[in-house]
Image 1 (cartoon, helix red, strand yellow):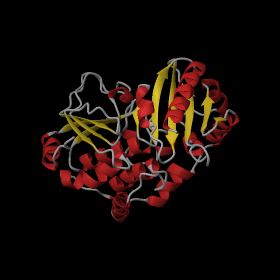
Image 2 (cartoon, one colour; image 1 turned 30 degrees about the vertical axis):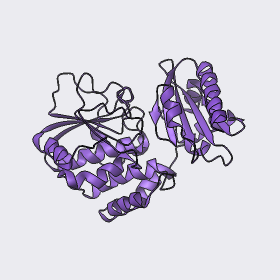
Image 3 (cartoon, one colour; image 1 turned 135 degrees about the vertical axis):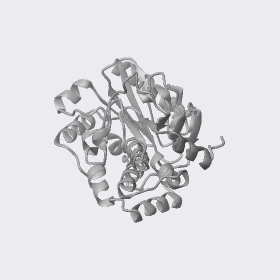
Length: 320
């Protein structure tokens, strides 16, 4: 794939006055950081920017600059000169937030991205979409002030779990160092995004650990809607439970099953180095990275769990 040139993207930004930015459902730090970071840089350049996330911003990211500007829907009659999708591996992951609007520019780093935009800047080697933006914003005619640097660093730190995922590279560290130099508040990002936990989140963890199961080198756990309700956890994300599962020392793949309100189950895979879970997720209608992928699968919690575990074990045995 040939990436659009710096001049092409610079012209898109320069020729647009009203710009729509949106990212994926159940947004993580990279989705939020890229949305707010690019949005802040565009607003600093004098553009009118509309920021949208169908699930809104989780409470632990409310401290970020411009978080209060994010809307959960877009009025149908609003017209934009430029529509940009960020950190969204496929259009279904957008939650329908774009409506019938064409995606002019698709900026992402998921290897399973089908390149659904008119222009597609997809770099699977990047550790985060925020890393793509940090490396290229100035080439695209924008500036990175301390607020933008903090927002972009948020995506890099969260997607790499504090620079410790297997895809970390010297290049990524240099990008992060440059953002640090530009004023990114690294201690605050670490505290808010990786360290701080709510009481309800920890109770929710308890239900996940209680349901933990294992077969050979595969471990998984399941969380129902009732678990979330009883724990009092209001988020629609994984509450960082995947980080706990992926730390199990002698398991090559871990899976988290989260029951959803719409008769679906959110399935998240994490794989140790050498285990590519992206193809597995894609075969079930999802996508992501070789080390971390997910899918939304229709069915009951038990049905989806049985189907996914059976398929994962089969693939693990075939590779072995």
